[in-house]
Length: 112
Length: 112
Image (cartoon, rainbow over all chains, first blue to last red):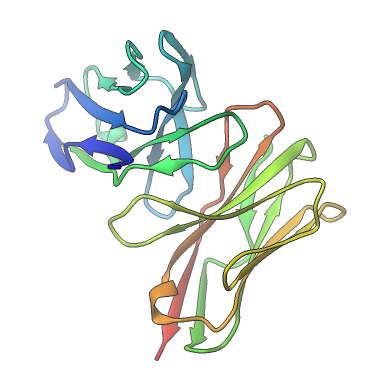
């Protein structure tokens, strides 16, 4: 199994541009999450989903949007990128609430 | 608000010694605790978890201790190896909650 796959691994955006970070998992997990990790900081939850068609905001949702049309995919959309969104983004999934997460390898995003 | 934090940002140990990484949490409603290991350029990897109805849990070379009285969590690594060098995060979440909160991490360096 591939686990959680994120693309791209690296991206540089100009201020005001938009992009979608892709995340897919092949473990048939219901729960999926997007976190951002700033240097020297812990991970902060952006959005999460408890199943296809259901999404909810986390701790830092502003400037982001998500959708969950299938169990496998959970893309994160950045509209009007800002320098404050420069970070490493991690997607994760879990089989059920209260389980440990399986993380992807991350997307390093720089907004200039 | 409630937060998860770590006592030490860095820890350096000699190969073969035991390592102890500490974590303090402040949310008394936390029910589930996890330790993750993050190697450079990779996503966090689940190491071991513990629920609030337990004080100790052992895995392969790792032990997690939970002291609910003082809201303290620790990760013990026996016979530390160079491959254990990484950043270690503790994470906590209350029961029936999808917002897992992460500490800032402790960087463990193993000297040969």
